[in-house]
Length: 106
Image (cartoon, rainbow, N blue to C red; front, top):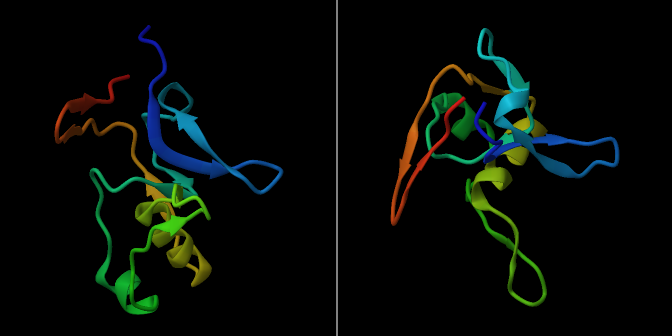
């Protein structure tokens, strides 16, 4: 078994705070509803954009100008506030390409 990797997949805990979901905690035989995610690999229906106010993506900053909330999670919170749901399919493996290539593998 591979060690857990920190994904950009989030759920709310009982205190109302978001936490990272571990890859090993996600089923690979069905999709599962989540509360937020990073946007490395996803599909969004156009109606979601039409349902939330512009700007769709905003960084929320702390007073010391560190990031309090990413633009991806901000979008998810806006979508959920208008009744949209967010789902993850952990059977799909996507690489994230940038300065480094990140792989999420089961």
